[in-house]
Length: 347
Length: 139
Image 1 (cartoon, each protein chain N blue to C red):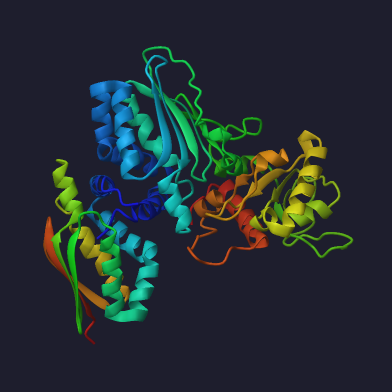
Image 2 (spheres, each protein chain N blue to C red):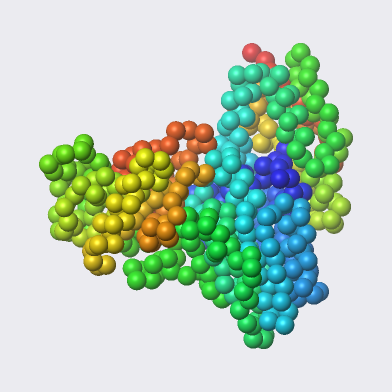
């Protein structure tokens, strides 16, 4: 049988199945109709009976059943129900089992909560998650004013908050990841938009130390209308470029141990570059691998690349297998961008 | 973490898929899930044979809340005597409308896993109690 103790694993796989079989809208319907519309109907019943208080008690029970490390805070005077998740057991299971079949598991909570809560006159006022098991959010009744609620347990004070990449919702709508770049609300489209208009995408991986010039790993030398994908060593060694668009992959190797000095050097070079010439920063965010406190380096949180690689069929994560090298990931990303820009986003 | 409310989601996913995309699509989903998500278990069954199948199911059901299941290892078969299916029990206890084909998910997931491990799978009974057998494929 399909059990409940490993449900989160095959649940995540199910999202990927729906996306590849029937497209992005299909998984949104799954969340809204199957999960929000049927599976979670006890939340609907609780909300209808007792509003925010009913939702609060139901979520507290869920937290006990699922051993959630979180704090739920209800302030009816402010018209706010708030949660701060310190360690999501669901995402935690995926991380512990090295699962990453789907583009974005964490989106599913908003996928079922928003349509369900709407039926009882409640909206998700704000929500953020960092894809590492930490998240927070507030809900309020739509028919009356609400006041922000500050809590001691605010997860954004937790150092782990700074290490992932954020998705954000306001008033039930997912927000653009980088509004200064595009209106894209998911990383796949953001990457496509970043490199839109480039004639080709050239990959430049690291070269031996002291190399007089870097050469592209694939394709010809980048021209002014090309995009360029670099590893961190290649970025550090290279003089200022004039390609149309650039991006640097901060691999997991750079965020650990002896290679951390490279990260400090990258931050220094990045921050010294004028804003309109800075490359886009990228990171694999493989499950459970060491990552960096981006905020402490004053770097923007890098954009994830696995979602686009998964969506275009350029990468399948096999639990327990060796991590792909940065060069492999950039080459796959180059192909993924070409596929996605042609509108051929599935194998 | 074994939260039995996840059985509600399983039931809902099966119904959603069946009603939107049809029974054949639901069967394709179950079989694909088994062969892709459970590839590790299938490899263990292949290399360890029936003994591995028995050990695997004992470990699996030990983590399912309120399951009452006996795993019998015989020379030429592994039998699961499901005296109380934890999923059906939880769904019934909470008044959920159980999809009539719920038990078929075992046929297709276990069946697909068994096939790749060069075994056959059979089920008798259902909707709360059943017997399931894994036997080596006859040549």
